[in-house]
Length: 303
Length: 258
Image 1 (cartoon, helix red, strand yellow):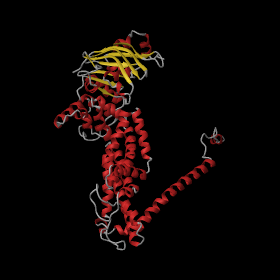
Image 2 (cartoon, chains in turn cyan, yellow; image 1 turned 180 degrees about the vertical axis):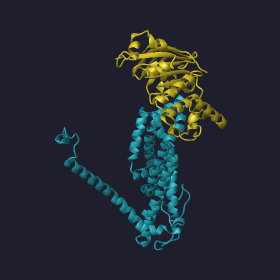
Image 3 (cartoon, helix red, strand yellow; image 1 turned 120 degrees about the vertical axis):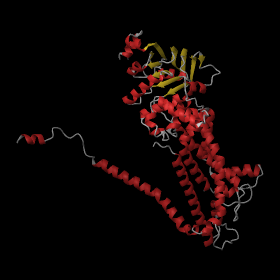
Image 4 (cartoon, one colour; image 1 turned 135 degrees about the vertical axis):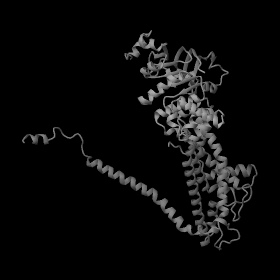
């Protein structure tokens, strides 16, 4: 059995090596670093959510909170609700969306389907880029100068919506543009080859294919503008009463209520501010959930 | 109704680049014509110019004449949309519309042209799917998305979609290059049947396929990189594969090319 020892010995050194210790160390370091960065990013978010819920959640559990305004209550009386501000936030956000979404989608369609690399398309893209960097206070002051000073219209919820439109358009243009771009050209060609005109191809083939993502983008944009504070401070007055008229009179909204009630330096004011904060977060969460539900319903299926 | 195609002095450009130089050929009705040739020789470009899909690419343009039963496809008064309704096309990669069911994919051309009669659409869908040899496989799941079918089934779905608008001519741009041999065979059999009703032009890289399915073969080549592609010769498939008129054709077919 002397030959067995020969066979036991490998004929050549092994082709594969173990992971060397330097690489293993680097891997461990990188893992720790990434995990740590994640925690640092997450901590303030969780902290914020816990603080807001801890201070405000008890106030929103009351049915009155969702049904009543603060009318007739002094700054020392507990009770009442923020119905007037919820209405304001929804009105302003939705009016803004009704104006901004069609414009933004048409702009995105022009940029992707018609403009391509034309000079006008480049100019539009450039303008949208600049617009997306405009601070909300600047948008608010611009609308004030245009709507109130130049056209002589009163400050109103509608003026707020106009300022929000300026903030919303670039966001929706950008997301819609990206989503239309990833619709494969093969689908457009398939439609053309069937003798389907270009506009019908866009309306019936391209947009439905990108629909799910476009809806997500729109709901995220609505959620964002509903939390904007500068336009409501500049363009509409605060009130504790319910106002259903977006074109006239003061109309409250959740961010406006928070900045106004913040000046009430007692427990009542604190309750109102934190309660409104929870309410705003809840409304935005509901919008996001609705958006992802609709986008799931309209997403492409293969089964 | 199958129609004949006459191409006269067709020059094709992408911007300043001269892609195809002066092609003239005739495609008789109820026949299959295969375009063969090395990559980049312009055979797909010529195919796409026949139903004015060439000009969809920005900067692309065509000079010359393409006559469909004597009618110029490139006449200035002609709407390219109506040309494409008359001359259908099947692409290299199956591209069913992802938002639509199998049935809606098939009738998409009619439906988007304004046809609303549900019974008529159902009838057309069945006829087209039977015509594309797909009916038996999908008749129980017409309302499922087209994206759930296999590659070969998707390509037959695209053929059904193309024939559902009842074109006179069917153009096929390497319709089997993304498919396995069994699906390829199914499509080749289908081409043989479709010949009864349509004039077919097919681009293929597979010379056995050209020999199997076509009546007439056109060989395209290009003199060199940056040179325009040109038509070397067009003749009966049998002659091209047994006794071609040009040395270049013989070299390409026997694999002595390049």
